[in-house]
Image 1 (cartoon, rainbow, N blue to C red):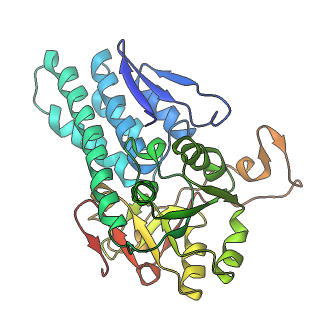
Image 2 (cartoon, helix red, strand yellow; image 1 turned 90 degrees about the horizontal axis):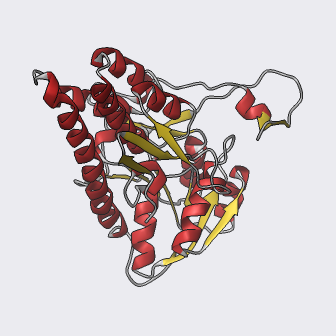
Length: 323
């Protein structure tokens, strides 16, 4: 399995997702600021993965003697929508609270390693629970959106973890991969992971999904999540809401797969989830080449799917079917 991180020689290394699939380049981070920049610029992305990265970023801050409160604020502000980011930083800060200075780094690093290991275990558990929702006597064609695999979680994945588990059981006929505009995480990252695992996959543009459902080529939709409200309203990569509406119209089951750390107990409904808006250049250009006319562009990074459109939310603890 791909390893998206490593901590070595007093530095944190991130497999730079901006360069995939054409180049496997390791980005070196030596400070919390370096990690926050990697998160902000999408060198690392995916709610669980940026939580893990932020935890190691705080360990780097402890190692260098930086002000930990300032480092924590810098990391938390890197991206506002994914709740795992703030959750992981606050967990590390709680673990080192009151420790003598000489013990802070090792304890912070240990907590970051624990968060990563727990994510691996959570991915495995939710993947099993998710796969158990599918009948044993047939194969399925599944549509997924964005990237929810090892690169996004540090483990076997959330939505992609369920798909991997189904593939292990011989129950995947085809995985349809949304390219996921504007940054093509599906085309670049999910397709990359599925190809490495030799799982049958077909790439489609985002606006083909409804037609495939109409043709009865999609048996289920499984996506991840960046924040889940108490009532099960779910924020995920932009385009997820559209898939949920299409799935409802075509009577296709629509599943969310995410660890419990993605739930926000302070967020009662999706209306309270902050939505990050990114630079218009991401929509108007790709790879440094302008591909659009010179007009304004709207670029929210996430949308919110109301719980009434969600068949079930799959976690490592249980499957939620009602708020």
